[in-house]
Image (cartoon, rainbow, N blue to C red):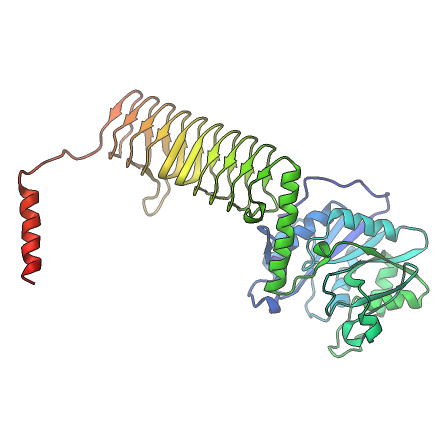
Length: 455
């Protein structure tokens, strides 16, 4: 599945451009059986973030993967993928995609560098298309430059990139660091990639060597600076967590700028696709999984978890509510504390305020579902639906065994187990007759006490 941003950036001139996305990394430093590109940020694989932003800027995308990475190939669809059968370095990986370069410009991006914005990618292309600029790259000034390669530049022109291990003390003092992303004319880029040598300790073909080749050819190389939060590389679980924190801050800020109230922003966790309309109120410690839409005026109270659901205008959710995939909560409806809703439509103004499970059900408008109610939707083999009409009163601790239908305006007595359909306007009892045995309670207690005293 391909992901795209909802906000398109302004188009660049008509010269076509291709993005080559390198996603063959195994994620060894992640200590994971999943490819690095599939590690998640804000509920979305890293590669999907990069695809979404690159698709808003480039005419063509091609993804380079490693052998036996069917899940990465599936994520990349419908964009073409090529396989780097031997992992011989980043320049070698980029060259695997040369058949897709086409005409115009080519940029090489990285799946483990997934948060580059469409705006920054546009600036990269614009710089490349400036007069006399043959190669453009992305650079940053991180708070802790650490072991990043340093960008050595004079008067805005890049002379070379020096890897930290090879840098002098003066070069290590440079705070402009290489992010690894390059952009050049397709034909020229292809020539440089083929000229890269593997004369290094690892015997690999490094993409950064293209900069030296460009300078040697007398080509003007320029650096485009962007924020560290966009250009940070992610190679470990620690760096993944740091990127998650940065992305969450970005998502929270965007939500508040769009009119959402986050009472304690730092405690709310959003997904990349979370849609919160203006005048939504979110209390502390709320988690939004993938696929959530919340309409204007709704309130999400503390310690609630929402995933794959839609909450209509002015609805009230929580505290301590769980909305699972397929939940659709109507206008002004209430889903209260310790209520779980899955694959269920809750009508406008309906209420389930306490300790209830609603699964595979349709709840009519203005219906009240009492505390402890359960829709028994699974028989061990198949799922079945419960249909409840408008203006129904379901008493506390009711068990509704699906498939079953409760008619409009019906009432279900508290403590009932309902296994047959209930007509409109009916009052249904589904509980055993109560029997009281005089003095049996006292006798039972005395018997137990004597047994305990006698050991």
